[in-house]
Image 1 (cartoon, rainbow, N blue to C red):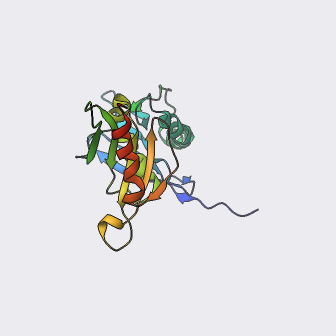
Image 2 (spheres, rainbow, N blue to C red; image 1 turned 180 degrees about the vertical axis):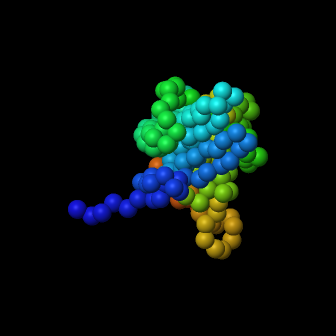
Image 3 (tube, rainbow, N blue to C red; image 1 turned 90 degrees about the vertical axis):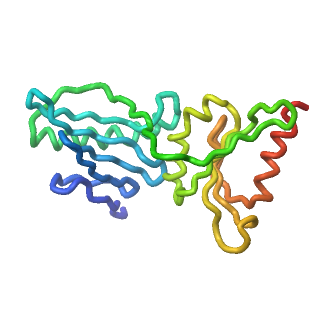
Length: 210
């Protein structure tokens, strides 16, 4: 049986991670957090370790995303056992704690995301929503954009596409890009040139009121 590779977890804790998971530590005045990321699902969430006014240490695991987003449950399924394992190690050092419900951490503002609302040629209603993921270089980054924009496209309830940066050389208008449909049904990642993708959106606008 081949040996499974693991990634080193938080230093000094004897903790390893699956090969697709990475962790970073973020410090704040009364504690720190371990932020976990999956190279396919994007940011999973974090384990927050903080001091309280009573002198106790509080550990809270937080899954990233909106409760209604089906992908939040998938992130939780990956994050929960990792956080439980790490909490067990920390409790062996600091002492046992009390279980608390796993909260959902809503996406925090991270600056502007370029988007386009495609509207019907006749009535002007929105028929598609395009999210331009200029920093999306892997599947996990596409999922980060989908997670951050979930409340917008779920509210509008129109076909929504996450569009990555142009790939390769040559004229910009001819370069393909990775495109992921995320709403109302998820589709596979596709690598399409403008002339292959644009007709889909144009047809949505043209056919809406026919």
